[in-house]
Length: 101
DNA sequence: CGGTTGACCAAGT
DNA sequence: GACTTGGCCAACC
Image (tube, rainbow, N blue to C red; front, side, top):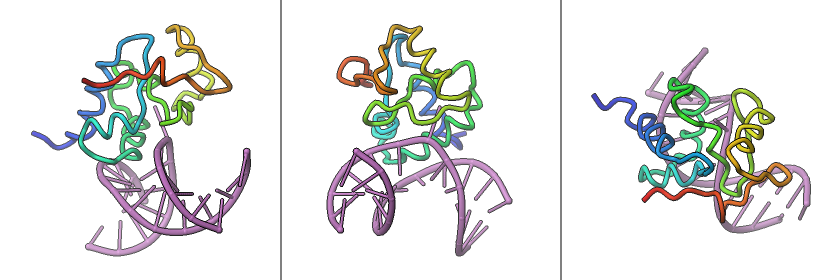
């Protein structure tokens, strides 16, 4: 019943992201064939799939941590725990950005 | 159905 | 480098 196909797609892609890697809102929207960067963020904020979907692996297009439902500090810690290095609240997308193939 | 908001992005000032 | 504007899409009121 494709109803929340958009959200479902976002979560599905996010789930595909391996541990120790991150992605961007733009990449997700682009993979979905849309430009709804904002809608992706909105979906994450509601995140009905809370522990299932690693929303903390989603960063802004320039690697910034923007917001997080549990607090940016939490997101930062989780990413660090996964082996991702954070630099002044930013991540090296050139290294940690996961591309949906 | 219209207006507002939001974990955005890019370009312009 | 900081702020503003326009654009995009979904969810909420």
